[in-house]
Image 1: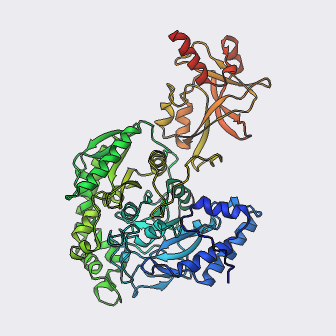
Image 2 (image 1 turned 45 degrees about the vertical axis):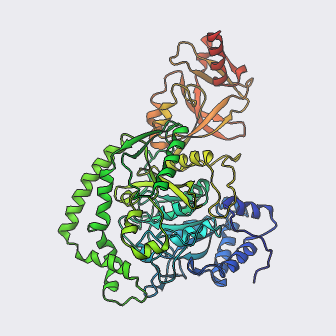
Image 3 (image 1 turned 180 degrees about the horizontal axis):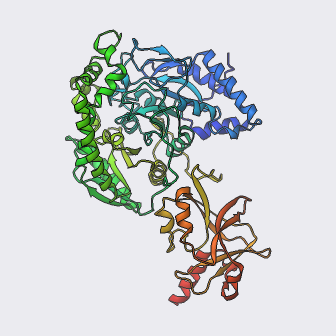
Length: 614
């Protein structure tokens, strides 16, 4: 059906796919047809279904329609022709959803909004992946369709429950995949397979169309080979869904970044269950963060662990029972995993009184957790305290699974966001991972921290052995929803006295550039700290500026701090873009020093420092 071009696309990231189409030598019809043909011969324990010819053809026809609606400009579709996988507890119209249970499998009538948003951005679903049945497990072994083996060593577990999605990305078969995460299912497999795993704030991405595990806690999650790809997918995946009762609109104060001297809370006491090598790898990560300028603050994790205990020892199991428990308990589901069935059956034992007692306990623990988070910007934890062989899990399937959730189980209960990142490799070649955890709606700030980590300690692309591309990009980034892009020219520049007014409001540095050649810069008289004034003038020059993305909800409080003769207006940049930025009233130049020739405030202040020192 599709012409063979014999291009090895395994290991390609999003930009690789877009670049191939941009060159014009291949089309999605050719490349994706070939990829799907390859996947049909891939491990069936990873891929529960691969797109049929008709399923692929329908998506490609819809992609052509979207391209035509965009006037033929494929760059208007951020994921144009990019393949992805979805965990098989997520509905896609015309595809089976099994949740890894043959007796539960049924064809979906509608596509989950999260998947639909990706398709509308141009992405193509090439298959659905295996999981711990009903998303109950962190091991990747609880499926009648087969055990998903680790991408680095088949004797070890892949992690779960989103095992297939993680391994498909780690092997380079797709550049990204969707999982779900209730207690760590989108982070544990990322840590075991050298991936980035983004666990959004609850409600940031719709979970309508997902087979519930704990509906009030469930999140879609993203697996990617690097932080940039995870961020790009999240930009398309996130969005308020009024038909999902648990969906929430992002507040306009959601921070974009943490300050460069970020404070990271680490466990005051870390439990490793005897795995000294895991402890050593985490210590390497802690040392690396200190080298990056972070302050590591030991904190008491007891309230977090107490909250985690409520997930499986409390009444939240009743949510799993509500979703599928009755069928499991009466034995009508073919292929039900006995460990999963036993866990979910316990949900029937909870009473309404049990629920309210646990809810009150959780509220008290959340208050303690919120207080803990006022001491730090985010938490830094090992993604897991260890990694187990398949035979270990076979002999002790419940206790070892529980250990894996030591630093993941509490996150959704306490309404936090998380980002799993690759860290050091063990002596046996297996990867380890770290996870950054922040308050609700700190997703973008965690991704910015992740970019800092990746820039300092890049890792291979999953298990492919291929190097990651440079994070740097020359293309101007779009302004994120809910932000104002602001050009700063003086005391608010990085490292300058007033920069904290931006960072404390969660603003993120985007790029350093210059204005158009139509401005003059003046050192204003009598300002404390010293400040410049930027005035538009036909006889001007290009002046250095920094662009910051400031949450729109924090914009008013920032502007209120700006004294006369300064204000916020519209600046023209060297490339023709227009952004909000600092301007100065013309009368202020009468007693000011023209410093335009320095090209920017930073160079002028360096000159003043040299003169003072001399």
